[in-house]
Image (cartoon, rainbow, N blue to C red; front, side):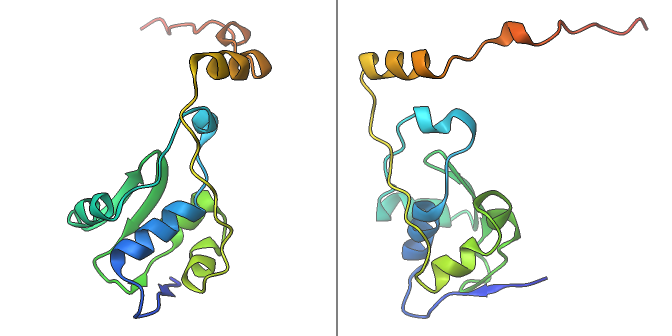
Length: 127
């Protein structure tokens, strides 16, 4: 198992925020507003030891061994090597998404139509 070591000058809260900044949203998550987590919110989540999701983004990281972290959960979603890029300060920062107005939501749905009727109906087995 490979690990990533964060610089001793970075606090856990700063690290969590940096991981959040570099992570993408999943699926149609781009359609939702995700404001950046505050230092206080990061501190609250870190009390649990591990962070699964934070403000709509998957972190999938256990912080109990900080500053040495296992990147497997985070990198599975963010892309191989992304946690290491965060640790050395070269990760691409993904900006929070703004809160959409009703008109913007409607326009987004019009440009990206999703229909569930394209799936075949589910057939229940005869038991």
